[in-house]
Image (tube, rainbow, N blue to C red; front, top):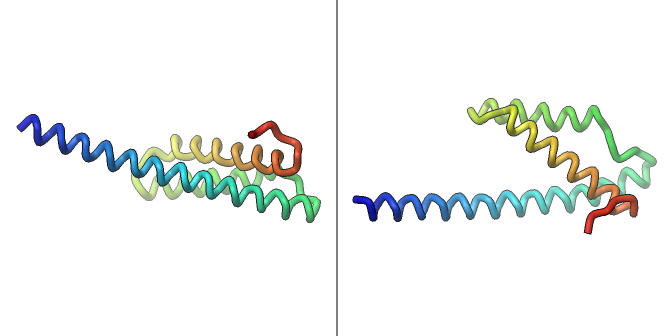
Amino acid sequence: MYETVRMTLAGLRDEMGDIDKKIIRLIAHRQRLAAKVARFKHQEGIPIHDEAQAQEVRNRAYNFAAEQKIDPVAVREIFAILVTMSEERQRECLGEGNLP
């Protein structure tokens, strides 16, 4: 019995690891899009930080998390980090940041 539970637990952990990799790939894709956004904003003279847009992203994440029955506050915090990462990427693309 214990061996079955352990193998199932290992399988579940492997599946979670695969999901983690997908999440990281999606974050990388989001960062590449942020670079494109930076170029557009630069051409149009739009500032990198847009508090209304950042709030909209956080609210959208919060509401969708609530619909999915997961902690919306935690998800909003994750998306606050993603917005900050995107803004840093944009600054870096314009030669203003400190990312690698």
